[in-house]
View 1 (tube, rainbow, N blue to C red):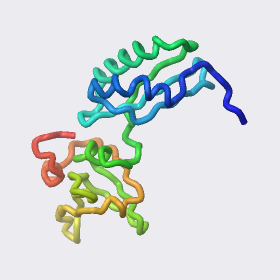
View 2 (view 1 turned 180 degrees about the horizontal axis):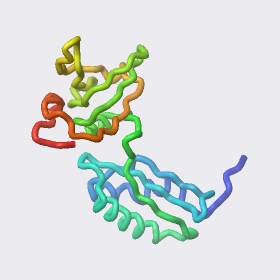
View 3 (view 1 turned 45 degrees about the vertical axis):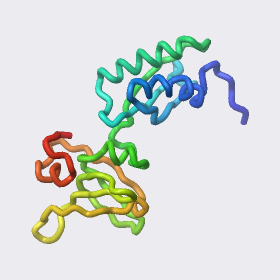
View 4 (view 1 turned 135 degrees about the horizontal axis):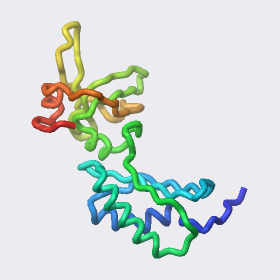
Length: 175
């Protein structure tokens, strides 16, 4: 089935138009979703950075995107700038780096699962702070990235234990 022309910019066009501006502001475009079927149509730009994305950053990126996209001739649409959200699987080195200190659930290629606090990357492996043995002592395990089938950040409702953060390389920093 042929794609219907909507007059909205394509995902590729939005990325090409905004990528340089977002990079200058210190952010990466993770994804762009163009929903021409929504009423009104919607452009969603998913952005991230090593320092995260707070409300001030969303406002700044929204102003940048709006100014750039207003230069193109297109029908009215709703523009949304957002963060990837915690349910996004970790798939690249920068995702693992940005999630350092966060609690993650890993599904390994052998089918087993592992839950722990994400530490730093070491080449092709990532450090994970886990509880080990009957006494539940904290240990750091290096897990090869190639052996991880899926990695997802877990939502935490209470502050992480300071010792876990320390072992994850996050001394003095709350996540």
